[in-house]
Length: 246
Image (cartoon, rainbow, N blue to C red; front, side, top):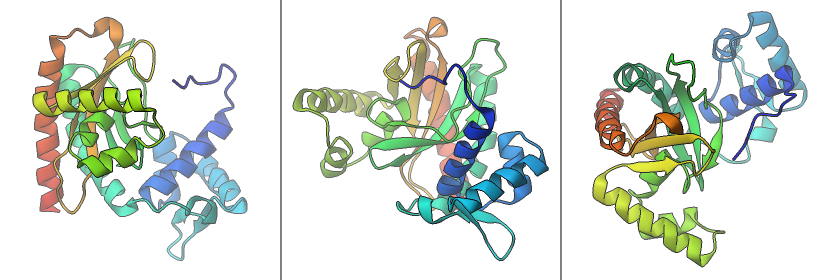
């Protein structure tokens, strides 16, 4: 579990989030950065300038900014991730309208899932924006949902580093996920947070994506899981159709 530091430095947090977005989603304009971070264009330009100075970013001939040498050590499906985010956002908004809780889109990256888009609910007590964050795939609801679609070899690679008892526990849970069609993260990654996730069917040449609905555990009950899962499954199918349609 990762909690935001009590004395967080806003500019550092913005710079780190920006570096993560450039690595995961590919090249961005200054105005795109300002919109994503919720800052002014001048602030976005200063953040990009510092990332360029430290080789975390570089400016392209078309004046967009892309991940720099420091961030290019692990290739990511940048174009696909950016497309997924664009396609998923309208469906995430509809999910929030239907279930009244925060909705996320994420992609599998090795043994982790990376959140690429979040639409928050408007409730006072709610799960916040996770875009740019990573979580262990075997603990998060979306990660479990994607792992359940993989073959044994791919699952073993994603669980590398866990001890035998932990691997056996995860494999049992994945069998349950395959049987019922959705996964649950009941405070596995953060106390007081429960999430339900489903995999997005492979489409448009892209695979390894998932959606989740996340809520304060105090508002969650087991009878809500199938309802949320049905809404998530419909959204995932719609996203797959949109990806196939280009």
